[in-house]
Length: 289
Length: 286
Image (cartoon, rainbow over all chains, first blue to last red; front, side):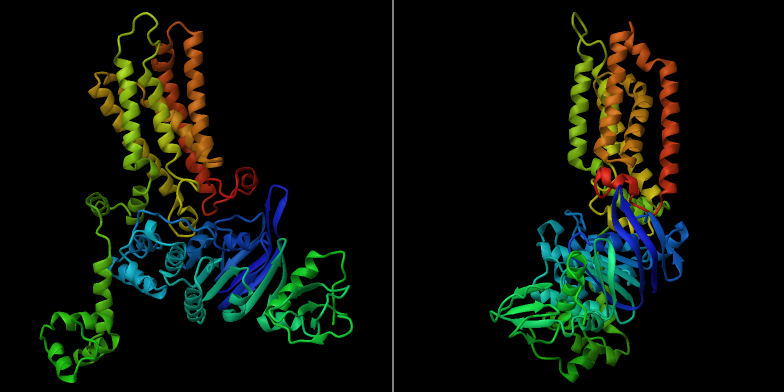
């Protein structure tokens, strides 16, 4: 399902959470990266039809989210995991996912129950189907949230910080699951973890302060930092960002790294830091190759 | 004892031809997709899928009798299950409501002598009790699943009205039972119009702000009216529950119900009124 946002603005009083956002998302996995307060959650809520934009339009699969009919059609094809997804603690895992499946208009009980079981298998919770949600850990509850998002086999899957609270093994399993889902659907996941994006995303959107700073494939984001990443012993005066790595050396993003600096191959995180740092430090010149 | 190796060809053929597998073999078949596919190949059916269906039915929760009856009567399954999650229909809530009603009934039944009550406490308390139940029946700070539900095709208007009606009906019935059992049964009919008006004030304000603000507004308005009637008129009972007042309550309730349904329909699909989001946190009710 193609999603097109055109001039999307969302304001809360005088605060502008989204500023003229233009986006085109297609089948595959798009990672929305950005620091806290960048507008990722607001963007996903607008796409999920739970937040009315101040202005601008969103179309998904050709349906206009500005119309009641369009929203209803999109919701039939939508899976959504909010950032703070609440669950009914007294429900069992199966009951909860089954309830969301009912809301998603899966009316045939036997087919619905089968889908529920498949969703639980996908997130590795089939053995806990009869357990009450109140007895689950935070990571397990997050997996229940993911299961409810995928239970109706959505064409558009929106996941807000889906890997929060997952242990490394579950994060790996989650990546495999999303990678398989993204083969035929449009998956949008918001995260502040660059490694999640690097691992599975076919496209990346970088946001900061409500604006889209970058949209394109991860390789293009990485390429932004080519020739600007260095390994140095000390932070040069004009460095945009620098941090100490495991080896003890400084990793520096700068146009002029000073004497002794050695150029290194950029990664996705370098590209992300370059884009967001350039945006946040207005007084400093943006490095160019 | 459990079977760890895969089933032999002969055993697969026996099971496929109808032989009932032993307990250990059944357990192994449940765990082993390879052996299930071997048997399925013999049977020429998708045993894996069939087994998955069986497992799903084993895990599926059995609907409660009330839910089955309502669904059989044509009420959508999602609406029945959504209404069942209403916070103000929980046992603990209903127990509190029953206890407060009982105390109010007991106080109302006391002989009014000397500095006794000017107004029957039940008539004052009952509208507030139901308004609280209605105000907290639906909304982002009340229903943890609110945002997820908004992203489904389920109708918010229907969910809102079903939960409100259920909360109003059940809590009203509780108070009426308490009133009847306390010998002040006629009061149950007297307070109904005022209860409807106060509850709908709570619901409409809650819809535009938050449940707590809605409930506080409804109850405050009602108590202000009670106080002013007590202080300013000679016959507060006639002022508050006379025929004209009852008609006025019903008119207010009908108008507010229209406002509620209309505003909910107009905003259908969008959780946030952008102007209220900054004032009231991220999730105002509508």
